[in-house]
Image 1 (tube, rainbow over the protein chains, first blue to last red):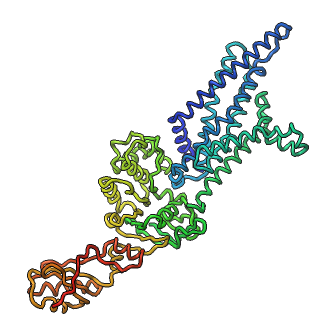
Image 2 (image 1 turned 90 degrees about the vertical axis):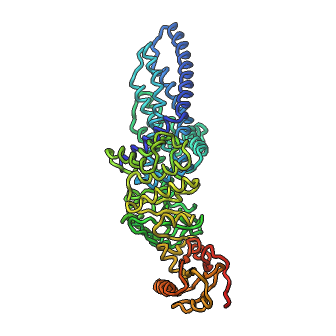
Image 3 (image 1 turned 60 degrees about the vertical axis):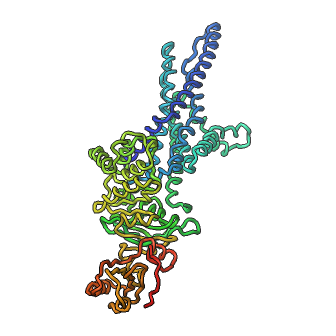
Length: 260
Length: 322
């Protein structure tokens, strides 16, 4: 594998992200929503705090009461953001035909996929990192516990890797950005809600455990608590690898394609 | 330098190309000629390792396309039919990106970019956004990106398509300037263009190679006779009968003008030389002797339809009666 090729693909994708309005608009919308969430959670916390203070207990933890629900809700927004940020990566190359330029250059398909993947993760994570202002804001008025904050961001980074990997596959199988986005919405939301089936008592026993394992939500909880469990790291990395492998196969298979 | 060996590509049950075999010698400009849909683009995509062939293989710059695709691509500059450019980049940024992809050493990148900008006449648009350039300029950016890593082999798919006449001339001039330093395979459905630029021609029709060689070879191979058009200073009685005595003559046709004839000769160069010598030794004053050759159009029509060619712009011929 040639790191230089990956770097050039990465650099090109980043420059397109930064040169087109989509990323800025998404970042602005995201921050507005995040601000609103933070505000409502703060209000709720303030009311609770006042009630608790009257009862004489003030042991409310800023991190657990504010940051944990806040970070969890933010991750949910990426169900919508990642497909929008990722849909262009391969579908647009196919629509414009520029994929031919990449695939006739001395660059391996793996390098193309990885370069684009890294750019997608970097851009999504940059947007997410903008929310660091909210924990910093808390720092002005209290003493948040930085451990869970850091592990929470790490968890979301892993989540974004899995999301981007899977969304890239959706982008690799079509030349329409809209189709790519629709397919990846479906995949990601399914991963999010698949755990619901266990509430219905339909899946029990081993099946329930499998469904529970596939479901994304349960794997994030520990990170918000400040626990970095290798089991969850492995889960997200395997999803990422699955997405990237499918993306690679979909892209490379075009060399063998049987239609003009 | 380019050697296609039995390339076959099926799209479903339909063969886009079948048993395509041809070669291009180093430093030559070869024209890849065929009507739209004949299989030119498919062949070029296989040669550039964008597609895999169903059967057969090819060697480009000494590397096999199946076993060494990266080396082939490193040695090849490719301009697809519609130049594939990132419209939001400036010309310079785009060339820098492509130079990076093609592995131009970091220290030489700036140099190479300046060179191809110069070579392709892109100086005044180097810092403009590609999406805002005219078609002619985009086409040149397409050639510039193919040249950026100074590859021994260039594969250009319809480089002049959709350009206005002035732009076409400029692009042709540019391609001609590559002769000797690069081996070029360029596809075209414009016959005239191929005769203007190329050293040799590969003709593809319905997915099969129907002819290849230099233009002269193609003409020679297809002509059953040589036609020599002659004009004399003055007419004379019995001229036609005397002309029939020219060694190697198969027939004589009198043309409209005074003392003008077409001699049909055996298809050998020596016969033509001998005929001209014989005619010029006669007292009628030979003022013009001109070979009528098949144009590429004639050759092409014959190859693709099987019809015998009639030399171009043939004026009305009357059988002379003396």
